[in-house]
Image 1 (cartoon, rainbow, N blue to C red):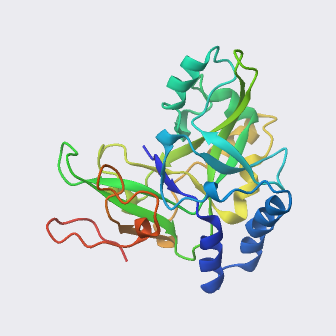
Image 2: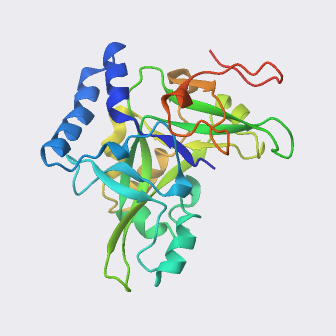
Length: 268
C-alpha cells in the first residue's frame, strides 16, 4: 500500500507559483496556512519532505464541517468503537490506507465513509518498485503534480476518546484505488492488484465531502474512487529513504536519481 508522503506545503506553493499554476488553487491553501500562523497554530514540524505513516505524523486535512480550515489529524485511523489504547495503537498501524472499493463495507471504515470523509492535503507521495521478486531491493519513486499544486487525497477521519486519559484523538486514513498504467509498473509488489492513492481532482475536491443522504449520493462518492490520469503526474526514482543510510526527511528526498546498475521504469 502507500505509506510514505510529503507535506512541505510552503515550499510547494512557491514552486507552483513559479510555474504559473492556477492562482486560485495556490491561494486556497496559502490563505489557510496564513490563518493558522495568525492564530499561532502553525508549526514548522508539520512540513515534511518525507515521512512514513508508521511514525503517525499529523497530516493536513479539510473536513465538511470546517471546509475553510486546515486541521491536522494523526495518520492511522482509530475507529470510535475501539476500547483501549493498546488496541488503538495496533489498529492504527493497519489503517494508514483504506481500499476504496470496500470502505462502505469494512467495520473499521464504514461509519467514517458514510459520515466523515475528508481531504488529505499532500504535496506528493512515494511508491516503491521491487527490483527483484522478493523485494530485497526496493527503489523509491516520488509522485507529484506536474504543476506542483498540492494534492487532495480522498480520506476518512474519526474522533476517538482514550477512556484511560480522556484524551480526544482525531485520526485519518488515506483511500487507495486501482493504479493507473504508469504507477502499475512502479507498484509491482502485487502485479495482479497494483494500487495508488486516490487523488481527487482539484476542481472536484469538495464533491468528496458531500453528505450522503441516499444511494445515489453513495454511488456518486464511489465514482470519485478511480485512477488519476498519469499525464498530469510527474513520476521519477529518488534515493533510498529508509534504513540506516536512508536520506530521511531532507530536501534531497525529492531529487531524481539514476540507477545505472539496474533497469527501472522511467516516465516522461
